Length: 313
Image (cartoon, rainbow, N blue to C red):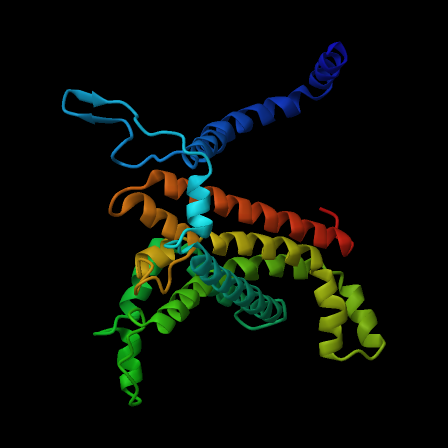
């Protein structure tokens, strides 16, 4: 104990400025992240809902009356006869893969295009970043108007060529495709900017050497550009996966998870469980813990895979 205290004191004497900057961040994270997380984990082992949590009605103060029920919420969610967890998880996987794949490939294509000499390149960059700069809820409402079955701009345009009208947000398959398209439209600029930064860090001498060796454009892209972007790609794909997995506002504001559960993903389903109908806080907390667990497991395996391929994180 004395040795540990001595190390801590020596570390403070030597790196007091670093400790001084880390401590406020640690306190803020503890208040905003750790405490709610611990509270959520605790609630997931209870039967808390709106009927048995503490409430104030006029002058009457009702205390908490929920009880700890162990793992029952987890068994009900994972194996219960009425559970929708696995179907919602499968849809979340489709949504996350489609969004991340399109985010990265479209962002890579646009970044490669904007990294070349191009007249008006600065204007194109600003225009392509705009979807990212607009608040997500405004984008969701705007696209909801564009995709509206009646009087929507898209159906009006399709009507001009004899197609439609299509119920973009009211049909199962079309609704899922629509929210994926909107999420891609919102997220591509981030990928483009991150990859563009990575492209500009690749030494031009590598391209010149490849040209001298007679490499074609595709060979330069495959053997110089992609390896040069490996570190940036690893980071943005991980961020994009977590971002899409937890993307709540687009789905909730555009379809509310409907029609039926056609666009429901885990985070929207957890919200519906907690705040619609009989508010089941314990069920929502259970979904929250499962979502965090899935992302932690994914991040761990993803990091191990990167280390196995030679990346240093």
